[in-house]
Image (tube, one colour):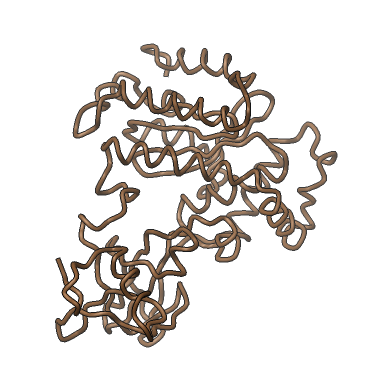
Length: 348
């Protein structure tokens, strides 16, 4: 483990806290200088997606936040953390100020589509959501496809490495900051994984998690019942309630039958839907073979599936308790029957 000049043991968040206590340091970033000496780089001015000329300290596995699934997949602590985090995202969708920002974006950038005119789309909700997802993907939100070095004009690369977040990044919920490196010079570029919906409405860039988070806000702003769906093997998408049925919407590949693709190609373990009124295990809707799912649960480092079931149940009840609701939503009974049928042999 690297040490700071003062001799304190370095850590992902300790470096930020230490720098904040030192005079003359605008932000505290624990870096490794080209000469190999560890230290704190002070007064660094940078844009979150800009290029800087310092080598940031790569976080060791022991320093990574619990939410980074690559190092914690299958652990109970990670499972509980995800349930709490995604429940909070869905709670944020109820924020009227955030909804107003989403509606403002529709007015400014999609006025010709008239998405806000509910009467225009009466009886055409699937068409409305389809066009909304295409607009979102093609014109509003951008996929993180890499970075170009401003000095060398070559594509920067990322090996999935993460670095210490700045104080500003932490304030917007970015406990993970992905690092891109230039292959020909020392320049690096940061990509903070922001959780703040307001910040994401500004940056409008991300991967599947950011896509799904922001699109869920648009669904909420338009008055739909919505869900944020997390696949523990590495994907996030949305569901929307249309004609009493939950429809899958993946804004990272609009126009594709994503549910069909997932059912045939992903070795899923847990897929959980987070809505305004519930938290529900919907794995059966997307799994190819339920027997295979059950075999994977509890094996390969995954914790007891009975514990996972209880944690999901508790999260489900907690969501309604916070809203003052005593009963599951009206669509739950039929959906439970559908999911049970999908778990039967030969029914997938």
